Image (cartoon, rainbow, N blue to C red):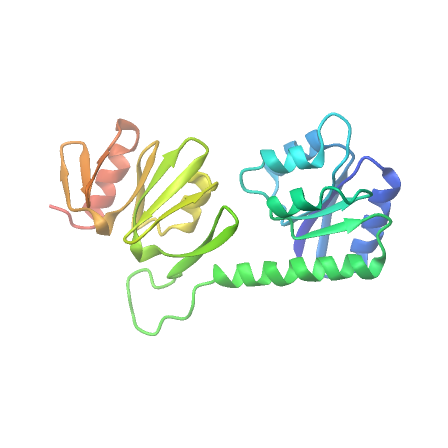
Length: 245
């Protein structure tokens, strides 16, 4: 399994070096190189990237600033000639921090670390074989959600509803609340569409956790959740499939 990666550095020689190194590692698929952060940001909006080799000090828009603007960043290996950014790299959950000039052996060690994490995350999103026939048994039982400096295991069957709060989502489960920078689109990709549905610009709910529905309001535990006109028809259609009377 290959990782799609890009390199970002305003020094051409540094980009060429990373390109040569990446060609020698069979699990790296280098999609492109960029000499500024702004063009990188545009590329990331349109393409799936698993790993960024990212320089820090660049004109106009630094690598740190780029990283801070990404709501769901890929894995990142920082490449820099300066060591004073190590603490900031830790705060941003960067996988590794390479000081220039970068030896090939150190480059390999960093990419191996990322690749191990990549494979683990891929496996965590792969459904385990079902032991017994069940509805939607091709969907995994849980996922791992990044929340601050932690990566939290979340069981789908414990989720009550998900609430949007500005730049964050708050996942309300039966026994906890989890804050994450994931957006609604990414969250919906993780959820079983037969069990979870968006009913409002600020809410996704678990069908199984509904206590009752009254007019355009859903009651789940002690929470009243509105159903907006934008999502009402899709919600009603799903209820019909579930044989709600």
